[in-house]
Length: 269
Image (cartoon, rainbow, N blue to C red):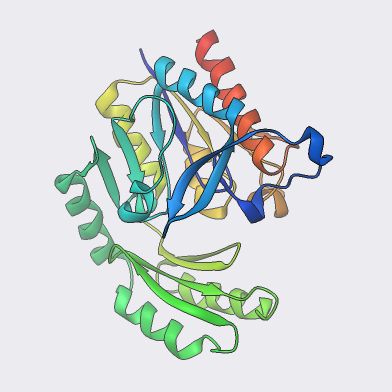
């Protein structure tokens, strides 16, 4: 039976320059591989060692990139190793099969959102009305499934995020603050549901997962074994579970450590 590895990408396996956390002396810094270019500029990195580990993992397991990114944002990432057959985008709203969104899966998701949550338009309207232009830089909608704000963190009033979370909770939505982005996501829109679907299709009897944010919590709880780095929302809140290993590593070296952990389990399975 194959082992399924569903991993978050940003700040779990790949890192922007601002998130690398290269705290060692310059001469000891790891060699980096650029894995994403946006508007002709390098944007995301992993260590060269992590790139080899991911290649080895792709050969030994069913590796499923699992991200809150839209399909367009995901497709500009150029990960090393075999091209994944499956990828989970838009926090589970799209299940890509050989790079193409599975229409049946997407239809199931959108039907459930319509039944269980306040409509996206209501959330958009609230964000436009309630967010302060002093600290909001962009209002965005992702694949017509959820909304997010790009903000100036140093100007953001933290209590505002808590108030938004309460407002969203009453409407079947959840709120997550990740770096410079505030996400508002329907509760049924989950990475874990899409991971279970991939496990069903592949016949995997062991699932492994990693992630750093509150939007990864359901994925980590649903997997047989999970890992989180020493940075991010989950680390900040002390998130834990019996099947979860909290790693001390931070920044791009955490991505390398997570891939080592995945490979160790896969090779021992």
